[in-house]
Each structure stands twice: as structure tokens, then as C-alpha cells.
Length: 222
Image 1 (cartoon, rainbow, N blue to C red):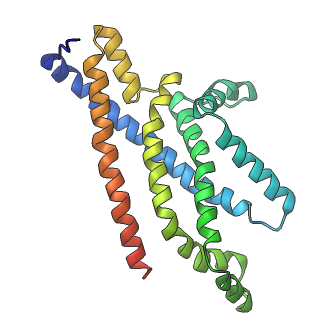
Image 2: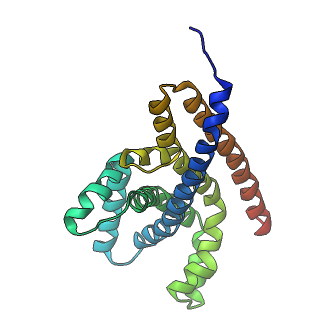
Image 3: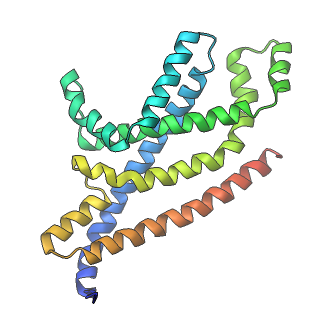
């Protein structure tokens, strides 16, 4: 098999792919921000004294984790209008990604919270701290450092899953590469460039996560 790489064609399509890369980063960033906040809410909701709420949230988390992301994207975008919820492809895609990964991050948070020594909880009760102060001032600051690695891994996972947004027409990186390939009947260059771009972003991001985790641990004296 002979690979006929066209450098002139590569230079022509690269600006389009770089513009789509920005869209991909925005989708991943917004989706991750939603997941970080909602994941913490889901984690705390599983620790309430109200047993029915705890069970409902746990089942919801398991349901989200057990169904494919692409199905959730379709559901939010195509089924939502039947309930009066009409969203643009961008909005639907970022909400679906945020919702999907919030279930995974809730488990990361839960593991971090449960890793806090039991004596910390007993000390908070002895000092008569409110539940809010216990979590915000004592528990969560200790639960976050061991959670950083997992949270960082899911950030990279979200970035690599953004191509799924192409199924509802979001002009992210993979969608643009498909469009370029269909227009010019050449897929080697756009697909290869997509792989290179993903690597060029994912590998430094993974290194940054490890550095950031070490910085957080040193900052908190752990």
C-alpha cells in the first residue's frame, strides 16, 4: 500500500481543522465545568440522611454510567423537544457530556470524601459545626487532593469523546475532518491531522494534571 501524502492539501485544510480544534476545546471545557459542579452535587446528594433521595440519586448515577454517551446525546437533542426542551446542537452536546461525566466524577468525589479519616467527622460533630461548614471547611479540602488525578483523567476523557458530538452536527474537530474528506474525497490527511492534534493536546494535558496534583499536595502539606 502506498500513502500519497499531499502537503499542499495539508496546508490548505489545516486552518479549518485548527478552527474546529477551538470549538472542540470549548465543548470539552464547558462540558467539564458542568460535570465538576454537578458531580459534586450528586456525590453530596448520596450522603444525605434522607434515604429515598440517596437511593434515587445512586440509581440515577448508575443509569447514566451504564448507558452510552452517544445515546444520551441523541436523547437530549432529539427527545428533549418532545417535552418542550429545544436546544441547539452545541448546547445539547455540552449538557449531555456534562451530565454523562458528572456521574463518573461523583464517584471520584465520593471516594475522596470516604478517604477522609473518620476522626475528622467526629471532631466536627464535637465542635458542633454545621453540615455546611463541615463539608466546606474540613471535608472537601481534604477530599480534593486524592481526587485530582481522577478528575484530570476524566478531563482528558471528555476531550477525546467530543467527536461524538458530530452525530448531532456539532462542528467539532472530527465533524470538520469528515466534511473535508467528503468534499475532496481525501481522508488520509484530515484524519491523520486530527490524530496528531488530539495527541498534541492530550499528552501535555496529562502531564499538567500530574504536576498540578503534586502542587496541590504540597500546598496542603500532604
